[in-house]
Image 1 (cartoon, rainbow, N blue to C red):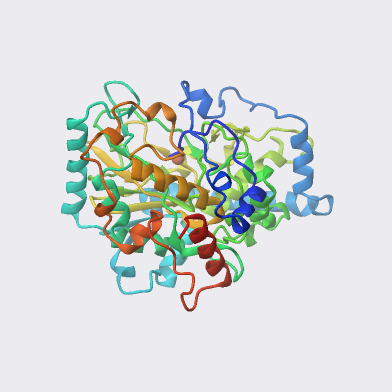
Image 2: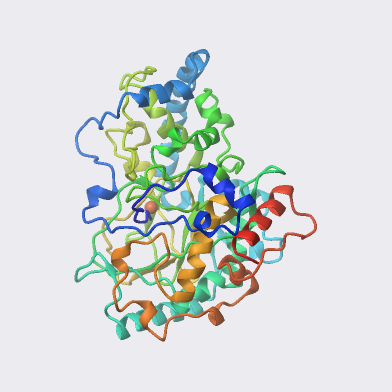
Length: 489
Ligand SMILES: [Fe+2]
Protein backbone atom coordinates (compact mmCIF):
# COMPACT_ATOMS: atom_id res chain seq x y z
CA UNK A 1 0.00 0.00 0.00
CA UNK A 2 1.05 3.55 -0.41
CA UNK A 3 2.40 5.11 2.70
CA UNK A 4 1.89 8.62 3.88
CA UNK A 5 4.31 11.23 2.52
CA UNK A 6 6.98 13.44 3.98
CA UNK A 7 6.75 17.13 4.74
CA UNK A 8 9.74 18.19 2.70
CA UNK A 9 11.42 16.98 -0.44
CA UNK A 10 14.22 14.54 0.12
CA UNK A 11 17.68 15.58 -0.95
CA UNK A 12 18.82 14.57 -4.38
CA UNK A 13 20.79 11.42 -5.00
CA UNK A 14 23.84 13.62 -5.39
CA UNK A 15 23.60 14.56 -1.75
CA UNK A 16 23.28 10.92 -0.78
CA UNK A 17 26.59 10.34 -2.54
CA UNK A 18 28.21 12.36 0.20
CA UNK A 19 27.55 9.48 2.57
CA UNK A 20 30.44 7.75 0.89
CA UNK A 21 32.97 10.35 1.90
CA UNK A 22 31.40 11.66 5.08
CA UNK A 23 29.45 8.77 6.50
CA UNK A 24 30.01 10.04 9.99
CA UNK A 25 28.44 13.38 9.11
CA UNK A 26 25.16 12.78 10.85
CA UNK A 27 23.52 15.81 9.34
CA UNK A 28 23.87 14.17 5.94
CA UNK A 29 22.68 10.79 7.02
CA UNK A 30 19.71 11.95 9.06
CA UNK A 31 17.85 13.36 6.14
CA UNK A 32 14.40 11.83 6.64
CA UNK A 33 11.95 14.34 8.01
CA UNK A 34 8.88 13.59 10.02
CA UNK A 35 5.70 13.51 8.00
CA UNK A 36 2.40 15.23 8.38
CA UNK A 37 -0.78 13.19 8.33
CA UNK A 38 -2.90 14.21 5.35
CA UNK A 39 -6.43 15.06 6.33
CA UNK A 40 -8.06 14.34 2.99
CA UNK A 41 -7.78 11.47 0.53
CA UNK A 42 -7.25 13.93 -2.30
CA UNK A 43 -4.07 15.11 -0.60
CA UNK A 44 -2.66 11.62 -1.13
CA UNK A 45 -3.96 10.53 -4.53
CA UNK A 46 -4.15 12.32 -7.87
CA UNK A 47 -7.61 13.58 -8.71
CA UNK A 48 -9.22 10.98 -10.94
CA UNK A 49 -12.47 12.81 -11.54
CA UNK A 50 -13.47 13.86 -15.04
CA UNK A 51 -12.98 12.31 -18.43
CA UNK A 52 -9.68 14.10 -19.05
CA UNK A 53 -6.84 14.20 -16.55
CA UNK A 54 -5.29 17.42 -15.33
CA UNK A 55 -2.94 19.01 -17.85
CA UNK A 56 0.48 19.44 -16.27
CA UNK A 57 2.62 22.56 -16.86
CA UNK A 58 4.26 23.08 -20.27
CA UNK A 59 7.63 21.84 -19.02
CA UNK A 60 6.23 18.33 -19.09
CA UNK A 61 5.93 18.50 -22.89
CA UNK A 62 9.66 19.22 -22.89
CA UNK A 63 10.14 16.25 -20.60
CA UNK A 64 8.38 14.01 -23.11
CA UNK A 65 10.66 15.30 -25.86
CA UNK A 66 13.70 14.57 -23.73
CA UNK A 67 12.64 10.95 -23.35
CA UNK A 68 11.44 10.09 -26.87
CA UNK A 69 13.79 11.42 -29.52
CA UNK A 70 12.59 12.51 -32.99
CA UNK A 71 14.54 9.71 -34.64
CA UNK A 72 12.49 7.22 -32.60
CA UNK A 73 9.03 8.70 -33.29
CA UNK A 74 8.15 6.12 -35.95
CA UNK A 75 9.50 3.26 -33.85
CA UNK A 76 7.53 4.39 -30.81
CA UNK A 77 4.33 4.70 -32.83
CA UNK A 78 4.86 1.19 -34.21
CA UNK A 79 5.64 -0.11 -30.73
CA UNK A 80 2.39 1.38 -29.42
CA UNK A 81 0.44 -0.33 -32.19
CA UNK A 82 2.06 -3.67 -31.31
CA UNK A 83 1.46 -3.06 -27.62
CA UNK A 84 -2.27 -2.58 -28.05
CA UNK A 85 -2.55 -5.86 -29.94
CA UNK A 86 -0.55 -7.72 -27.28
CA UNK A 87 -2.53 -6.14 -24.48
CA UNK A 88 -5.87 -7.10 -25.98
CA UNK A 89 -4.78 -10.74 -26.14
CA UNK A 90 -3.22 -10.76 -22.69
CA UNK A 91 -6.19 -9.11 -20.99
CA UNK A 92 -8.44 -11.87 -22.32
CA UNK A 93 -6.04 -14.49 -20.96
CA UNK A 94 -5.91 -12.89 -17.54
CA UNK A 95 -9.67 -12.46 -17.31
CA UNK A 96 -10.15 -16.08 -18.29
CA UNK A 97 -7.59 -17.28 -15.75
CA UNK A 98 -8.75 -15.14 -12.83
CA UNK A 99 -6.69 -15.52 -9.65
CA UNK A 100 -4.81 -18.39 -11.30
CA UNK A 101 -2.95 -15.73 -13.29
CA UNK A 102 -1.04 -14.97 -10.09
CA UNK A 103 1.73 -17.58 -9.66
CA UNK A 104 1.66 -19.69 -6.51
CA UNK A 105 4.96 -21.14 -5.35
CA UNK A 106 5.80 -23.52 -2.51
CA UNK A 107 8.41 -22.35 -0.02
CA UNK A 108 10.05 -25.76 -0.30
CA UNK A 109 11.29 -24.69 -3.74
CA UNK A 110 13.80 -22.37 -2.08
CA UNK A 111 14.36 -24.29 1.12
CA UNK A 112 17.52 -26.08 0.00
CA UNK A 113 18.83 -23.52 -2.48
CA UNK A 114 21.04 -20.48 -2.09
CA UNK A 115 17.92 -18.34 -1.72
CA UNK A 116 17.08 -18.73 -5.39
CA UNK A 117 14.00 -20.02 -7.15
CA UNK A 118 14.42 -22.69 -9.83
CA UNK A 119 14.75 -20.85 -13.14
CA UNK A 120 11.40 -21.91 -14.58
CA UNK A 121 9.61 -20.65 -11.48
CA UNK A 122 11.61 -17.43 -11.53
CA UNK A 123 10.56 -16.91 -15.17
CA UNK A 124 6.90 -17.26 -14.23
CA UNK A 125 7.27 -14.72 -11.44
CA UNK A 126 9.23 -12.41 -13.77
CA UNK A 127 6.39 -12.37 -16.27
CA UNK A 128 3.58 -11.83 -13.78
CA UNK A 129 5.46 -9.49 -11.44
CA UNK A 130 3.88 -11.09 -8.40
CA UNK A 131 3.40 -14.36 -6.57
CA UNK A 132 2.14 -16.11 -3.49
CA UNK A 133 4.75 -18.15 -1.64
CA UNK A 134 2.94 -20.83 0.31
CA UNK A 135 4.05 -22.23 3.64
CA UNK A 136 6.76 -19.73 4.54
CA UNK A 137 5.86 -19.76 8.22
CA UNK A 138 3.86 -22.45 10.05
CA UNK A 139 0.16 -21.64 10.29
CA UNK A 140 0.19 -21.81 14.07
CA UNK A 141 3.05 -19.31 14.25
CA UNK A 142 1.27 -16.84 11.96
CA UNK A 143 -1.95 -17.10 13.94
CA UNK A 144 -0.01 -16.61 17.15
CA UNK A 145 1.41 -13.38 15.74
CA UNK A 146 -2.09 -12.16 14.90
CA UNK A 147 -3.33 -12.99 18.39
CA UNK A 148 -0.33 -11.22 19.88
CA UNK A 149 -0.98 -8.07 17.85
CA UNK A 150 -4.66 -7.96 18.72
CA UNK A 151 -3.84 -8.59 22.36
CA UNK A 152 -1.56 -5.55 22.33
CA UNK A 153 -4.36 -3.40 20.91
CA UNK A 154 -6.73 -4.72 23.57
CA UNK A 155 -4.27 -3.68 26.26
CA UNK A 156 -3.58 -0.36 24.56
CA UNK A 157 -6.68 0.84 22.73
CA UNK A 158 -5.01 4.20 22.11
CA UNK A 159 -2.87 2.69 19.33
CA UNK A 160 -3.46 4.86 16.23
CA UNK A 161 -5.73 3.18 13.69
CA UNK A 162 -6.73 3.92 10.11
CA UNK A 163 -9.36 4.87 9.26
CA UNK A 164 -9.87 6.51 12.60
CA UNK A 165 -13.44 5.35 13.12
CA UNK A 166 -15.33 2.35 14.46
CA UNK A 167 -14.07 0.11 11.63
CA UNK A 168 -10.30 0.51 11.53
CA UNK A 169 -8.31 -1.67 9.15
CA UNK A 170 -4.70 -0.62 9.63
CA UNK A 171 -2.98 -0.51 13.01
CA UNK A 172 -0.05 1.88 13.35
CA UNK A 173 2.35 -0.08 15.49
CA UNK A 174 5.85 -0.71 14.24
CA UNK A 175 7.77 -2.34 17.04
CA UNK A 176 5.56 -5.12 18.29
CA UNK A 177 7.21 -8.39 19.24
CA UNK A 178 5.16 -10.17 16.57
CA UNK A 179 6.29 -7.70 13.89
CA UNK A 180 9.93 -7.98 14.94
CA UNK A 181 9.78 -11.77 14.94
CA UNK A 182 8.05 -11.88 11.55
CA UNK A 183 10.55 -9.50 9.93
CA UNK A 184 13.49 -11.46 11.28
CA UNK A 185 12.09 -14.96 10.80
CA UNK A 186 14.63 -16.99 8.79
CA UNK A 187 12.06 -18.28 6.29
CA UNK A 188 10.63 -14.80 5.72
CA UNK A 189 14.13 -13.48 5.03
CA UNK A 190 14.93 -16.47 2.80
CA UNK A 191 11.80 -15.72 0.76
CA UNK A 192 12.68 -12.05 0.50
CA UNK A 193 16.19 -12.84 -0.72
CA UNK A 194 14.85 -15.31 -3.28
CA UNK A 195 12.51 -12.61 -4.61
CA UNK A 196 15.29 -10.02 -4.47
CA UNK A 197 17.54 -12.26 -6.53
CA UNK A 198 15.02 -12.42 -9.36
CA UNK A 199 16.44 -8.97 -10.03
CA UNK A 200 19.84 -8.75 -11.67
CA UNK A 201 22.55 -6.16 -11.11
CA UNK A 202 25.82 -5.43 -12.86
CA UNK A 203 29.16 -6.04 -11.16
CA UNK A 204 29.65 -2.41 -10.17
CA UNK A 205 26.07 -1.40 -9.37
CA UNK A 206 26.01 -0.42 -5.72
CA UNK A 207 23.15 -2.58 -4.57
CA UNK A 208 23.10 -5.75 -2.50
CA UNK A 209 20.42 -8.25 -3.45
CA UNK A 210 21.52 -10.47 -0.55
CA UNK A 211 21.04 -7.88 2.19
CA UNK A 212 18.22 -5.58 3.10
CA UNK A 213 17.48 -2.37 4.95
CA UNK A 214 14.21 -2.86 6.75
CA UNK A 215 11.23 -0.62 6.01
CA UNK A 216 9.14 -0.93 9.16
CA UNK A 217 5.49 -0.87 8.18
CA UNK A 218 2.15 -1.55 9.86
CA UNK A 219 -0.38 -4.40 9.95
CA UNK A 220 -3.97 -4.85 8.91
CA UNK A 221 -7.01 -6.61 10.21
CA UNK A 222 -9.93 -6.13 7.83
CA UNK A 223 -13.28 -7.30 9.22
CA UNK A 224 -15.95 -9.09 7.15
CA UNK A 225 -18.41 -6.70 5.53
CA UNK A 226 -15.99 -3.77 5.42
CA UNK A 227 -15.51 -1.62 2.32
CA UNK A 228 -12.10 -1.13 0.68
CA UNK A 229 -9.70 1.80 0.77
CA UNK A 230 -7.55 1.54 -2.35
CA UNK A 231 -8.33 2.17 -6.04
CA UNK A 232 -6.07 0.90 -8.87
CA UNK A 233 -2.71 2.54 -8.32
CA UNK A 234 1.06 2.38 -8.48
CA UNK A 235 3.39 2.97 -5.55
CA UNK A 236 7.12 3.69 -5.55
CA UNK A 237 6.80 6.93 -7.46
CA UNK A 238 4.41 8.69 -9.77
CA UNK A 239 5.60 11.34 -12.25
CA UNK A 240 9.10 10.36 -11.09
CA UNK A 241 9.10 7.44 -13.52
CA UNK A 242 9.31 10.02 -16.30
CA UNK A 243 10.83 12.99 -14.52
CA UNK A 244 13.75 11.59 -12.51
CA UNK A 245 16.58 11.08 -14.97
CA UNK A 246 17.86 7.92 -13.31
CA UNK A 247 14.39 6.43 -12.93
CA UNK A 248 13.71 7.22 -16.60
CA UNK A 249 16.79 5.22 -17.61
CA UNK A 250 15.13 2.10 -16.20
CA UNK A 251 12.59 2.42 -19.01
CA UNK A 252 14.96 3.44 -21.81
CA UNK A 253 13.94 0.57 -24.09
CA UNK A 254 10.33 1.71 -23.87
CA UNK A 255 11.24 5.28 -24.88
CA UNK A 256 13.09 3.82 -27.89
CA UNK A 257 10.08 1.87 -29.15
CA UNK A 258 11.47 -1.46 -27.97
CA UNK A 259 9.21 -2.34 -25.07
CA UNK A 260 9.65 -6.04 -25.82
CA UNK A 261 13.31 -5.68 -24.72
CA UNK A 262 12.44 -3.89 -21.47
CA UNK A 263 13.58 -5.86 -18.40
CA UNK A 264 11.52 -4.98 -15.33
CA UNK A 265 14.00 -6.87 -13.17
CA UNK A 266 17.16 -4.99 -14.15
CA UNK A 267 18.36 -3.25 -10.99
CA UNK A 268 21.08 -1.13 -12.59
CA UNK A 269 19.25 2.20 -12.66
CA UNK A 270 16.57 1.46 -10.09
CA UNK A 271 19.08 1.40 -7.24
CA UNK A 272 19.72 5.13 -7.50
CA UNK A 273 16.41 6.34 -8.89
CA UNK A 274 14.56 8.99 -6.87
CA UNK A 275 10.96 7.99 -6.29
CA UNK A 276 9.69 10.96 -4.33
CA UNK A 277 10.90 14.13 -6.02
CA UNK A 278 8.10 16.14 -4.43
CA UNK A 279 7.80 14.51 -1.01
CA UNK A 280 4.10 14.09 -1.59
CA UNK A 281 1.68 12.57 0.90
CA UNK A 282 1.41 9.46 -1.30
CA UNK A 283 5.14 8.85 -1.40
CA UNK A 284 7.35 6.39 0.39
CA UNK A 285 10.91 7.47 1.06
CA UNK A 286 12.46 4.04 0.70
CA UNK A 287 13.00 1.88 -2.36
CA UNK A 288 10.89 -1.24 -1.97
CA UNK A 289 11.87 -3.50 -4.87
CA UNK A 290 8.85 -5.61 -4.00
CA UNK A 291 5.94 -4.79 -1.79
CA UNK A 292 4.47 -7.58 0.21
CA UNK A 293 2.51 -8.89 3.13
CA UNK A 294 2.72 -11.95 5.27
CA UNK A 295 -0.68 -13.51 5.76
CA UNK A 296 -1.79 -14.01 9.35
CA UNK A 297 -5.31 -15.12 8.47
CA UNK A 298 -7.20 -17.03 5.79
CA UNK A 299 -7.09 -14.45 3.02
CA UNK A 300 -8.61 -15.06 -0.38
CA UNK A 301 -10.79 -13.81 -3.24
CA UNK A 302 -14.01 -12.08 -2.18
CA UNK A 303 -12.60 -11.64 1.31
CA UNK A 304 -11.15 -8.16 0.97
CA UNK A 305 -7.77 -9.23 -0.34
CA UNK A 306 -5.33 -7.49 -2.67
CA UNK A 307 -5.94 -7.48 -6.43
CA UNK A 308 -3.09 -7.45 -8.94
CA UNK A 309 -2.55 -6.86 -12.67
CA UNK A 310 -0.30 -9.86 -13.33
CA UNK A 311 1.70 -8.72 -16.36
CA UNK A 312 4.53 -6.42 -15.40
CA UNK A 313 5.94 -5.69 -18.86
CA UNK A 314 2.77 -4.92 -20.85
CA UNK A 315 1.15 -2.87 -18.10
CA UNK A 316 4.22 -0.75 -17.45
CA UNK A 317 4.89 -0.18 -21.18
CA UNK A 318 1.29 0.98 -21.61
CA UNK A 319 1.24 3.27 -18.58
CA UNK A 320 4.57 4.86 -19.50
CA UNK A 321 3.69 5.41 -23.17
CA UNK A 322 0.14 6.59 -22.50
CA UNK A 323 1.12 10.30 -22.17
CA UNK A 324 2.71 10.11 -25.62
CA UNK A 325 -0.50 9.12 -27.41
CA UNK A 326 -3.81 10.84 -27.98
CA UNK A 327 -7.21 9.17 -27.86
CA UNK A 328 -6.86 8.31 -31.55
CA UNK A 329 -3.70 6.34 -30.69
CA UNK A 330 -1.43 8.74 -32.58
CA UNK A 331 1.85 10.04 -31.22
CA UNK A 332 1.32 13.37 -29.45
CA UNK A 333 4.49 15.04 -28.19
CA UNK A 334 2.85 18.32 -27.18
CA UNK A 335 0.10 17.48 -24.70
CA UNK A 336 0.87 17.32 -20.99
CA UNK A 337 -1.61 14.73 -19.79
CA UNK A 338 0.09 12.13 -17.61
CA UNK A 339 -3.11 10.30 -16.71
CA UNK A 340 -3.03 10.15 -12.94
CA UNK A 341 0.70 10.66 -12.42
CA UNK A 342 0.53 14.14 -10.92
CA UNK A 343 3.59 15.56 -9.12
CA UNK A 344 3.49 14.97 -5.39
CA UNK A 345 0.47 12.69 -5.45
CA UNK A 346 -0.09 8.96 -5.65
CA UNK A 347 -0.39 7.54 -9.18
CA UNK A 348 -3.96 6.40 -9.85
CA UNK A 349 -5.37 4.62 -12.87
CA UNK A 350 -8.87 4.54 -14.29
CA UNK A 351 -10.63 2.92 -17.23
CA UNK A 352 -11.36 6.07 -19.19
CA UNK A 353 -7.72 7.17 -18.99
CA UNK A 354 -6.23 3.72 -19.58
CA UNK A 355 -8.88 2.06 -21.77
CA UNK A 356 -6.63 -0.61 -23.24
CA UNK A 357 -5.69 -1.95 -19.82
CA UNK A 358 -9.33 -2.94 -19.25
CA UNK A 359 -8.74 -2.65 -15.53
CA UNK A 360 -12.00 -4.39 -14.65
CA UNK A 361 -10.75 -7.47 -16.51
CA UNK A 362 -6.98 -7.41 -16.11
CA UNK A 363 -6.89 -6.89 -12.34
CA UNK A 364 -7.58 -10.16 -10.54
CA UNK A 365 -7.86 -11.11 -6.93
CA UNK A 366 -4.87 -12.71 -5.28
CA UNK A 367 -5.37 -16.45 -4.74
CA UNK A 368 -5.92 -17.88 -1.29
CA UNK A 369 -3.18 -16.97 1.13
CA UNK A 370 -3.38 -18.91 4.38
CA UNK A 371 -1.67 -17.91 7.62
CA UNK A 372 2.07 -18.12 6.96
CA UNK A 373 1.85 -17.54 3.20
CA UNK A 374 3.68 -14.53 1.79
CA UNK A 375 2.30 -12.36 -1.06
CA UNK A 376 4.78 -10.18 -2.98
CA UNK A 377 4.45 -7.86 -5.97
CA UNK A 378 6.93 -5.88 -8.08
CA UNK A 379 7.36 -2.19 -7.31
CA UNK A 380 5.83 -1.24 -10.70
CA UNK A 381 2.81 -3.52 -10.52
CA UNK A 382 -0.72 -2.08 -10.68
CA UNK A 383 -2.74 -3.16 -7.67
CA UNK A 384 -5.80 -2.33 -5.62
CA UNK A 385 -7.81 -3.85 -2.79
CA UNK A 386 -11.14 -5.60 -3.15
CA UNK A 387 -13.87 -3.08 -2.52
CA UNK A 388 -15.96 -5.38 -0.37
CA UNK A 389 -15.10 -8.10 2.09
CA UNK A 390 -17.79 -10.71 1.51
CA UNK A 391 -16.18 -13.49 3.52
CA UNK A 392 -16.52 -14.59 7.11
CA UNK A 393 -12.93 -14.39 8.42
CA UNK A 394 -10.81 -11.36 9.12
CA UNK A 395 -8.45 -10.45 6.30
CA UNK A 396 -5.23 -9.90 8.22
CA UNK A 397 -1.65 -9.25 7.15
CA UNK A 398 1.68 -7.88 8.35
CA UNK A 399 3.20 -5.60 5.71
CA UNK A 400 6.80 -6.65 5.02
CA UNK A 401 8.34 -5.36 1.77
CA UNK A 402 11.66 -6.30 0.15
CA UNK A 403 14.06 -3.37 0.59
CA UNK A 404 17.49 -4.00 -0.95
CA UNK A 405 20.55 -2.43 0.59
CA UNK A 406 21.43 0.56 -1.57
CA UNK A 407 22.34 4.19 -0.97
CA UNK A 408 18.75 5.28 -1.28
CA UNK A 409 17.77 3.11 1.68
CA UNK A 410 20.71 3.62 4.02
CA UNK A 411 19.50 6.92 5.48
CA UNK A 412 16.19 5.34 6.37
CA UNK A 413 18.01 2.43 7.95
CA UNK A 414 20.06 4.73 10.16
CA UNK A 415 17.10 6.78 11.36
CA UNK A 416 14.87 3.77 11.71
CA UNK A 417 17.32 2.05 14.03
CA UNK A 418 17.13 5.05 16.36
CA UNK A 419 13.35 4.99 16.17
CA UNK A 420 13.28 1.29 17.07
CA UNK A 421 15.51 1.69 20.07
CA UNK A 422 13.33 4.57 21.32
CA UNK A 423 10.05 2.87 20.44
CA UNK A 424 8.82 5.79 18.33
CA UNK A 425 7.38 5.64 14.78
CA UNK A 426 9.92 5.22 11.97
CA UNK A 427 10.98 8.34 10.09
CA UNK A 428 8.75 7.59 7.11
CA UNK A 429 5.51 7.48 9.08
CA UNK A 430 3.20 10.42 9.75
CA UNK A 431 3.72 12.51 12.86
CA UNK A 432 0.03 12.36 13.77
CA UNK A 433 0.56 8.77 14.79
CA UNK A 434 2.88 9.96 17.57
CA UNK A 435 0.39 10.10 20.39
CA UNK A 436 1.56 10.55 23.94
CA UNK A 437 0.61 6.97 24.64
CA UNK A 438 2.34 5.21 21.83
CA UNK A 439 4.70 2.22 21.81
CA UNK A 440 7.41 4.28 23.45
CA UNK A 441 5.33 4.42 26.62
CA UNK A 442 4.42 0.74 26.65
CA UNK A 443 6.83 -1.58 28.41
CA UNK A 444 5.42 -4.56 26.52
CA UNK A 445 6.60 -3.39 23.10
CA UNK A 446 9.18 -5.36 21.13
CA UNK A 447 12.89 -5.13 21.90
CA UNK A 448 16.15 -6.00 20.12
CA UNK A 449 16.23 -9.30 22.01
CA UNK A 450 13.07 -10.31 20.14
CA UNK A 451 14.96 -10.37 16.83
CA UNK A 452 15.23 -14.01 15.80
CA UNK A 453 18.29 -14.06 13.55
CA UNK A 454 21.65 -12.45 12.79
CA UNK A 455 20.24 -11.47 9.39
CA UNK A 456 17.34 -9.85 11.20
CA UNK A 457 19.70 -7.80 13.36
CA UNK A 458 21.53 -6.75 10.20
CA UNK A 459 18.45 -5.50 8.39
CA UNK A 460 17.58 -3.51 11.50
CA UNK A 461 21.00 -1.84 11.40
CA UNK A 462 22.19 -3.56 14.57
CA UNK A 463 25.00 -5.64 13.04
CA UNK A 464 27.61 -4.73 10.43
CA UNK A 465 27.34 -6.10 6.92
CA UNK A 466 30.06 -8.52 5.76
CA UNK A 467 32.04 -6.36 3.38
CA UNK A 468 34.85 -8.90 3.05
CA UNK A 469 32.62 -11.85 2.08
CA UNK A 470 34.16 -13.90 -0.70
CA UNK A 471 32.34 -13.99 -4.03
CA UNK A 472 30.34 -10.80 -3.76
CA UNK A 473 30.32 -8.16 -6.51
CA UNK A 474 32.23 -4.90 -6.40
CA UNK A 475 28.90 -3.15 -5.94
CA UNK A 476 27.90 -5.34 -3.01
CA UNK A 477 31.23 -4.76 -1.31
CA UNK A 478 31.01 -1.00 -1.84
CA UNK A 479 27.46 -0.64 -0.55
CA UNK A 480 28.16 -2.80 2.51
CA UNK A 481 31.13 -0.58 3.34
CA UNK A 482 29.03 2.55 2.88
CA UNK A 483 26.29 1.14 5.10
CA UNK A 484 28.73 0.11 7.81
CA UNK A 485 30.27 3.56 7.82
CA UNK A 486 26.88 5.26 7.93
CA UNK A 487 25.85 3.00 10.82
CA UNK A 488 29.15 3.81 12.56
CA UNK A 489 30.40 0.25 12.82
FE1 LIG B 1 -0.34 0.22 -2.80
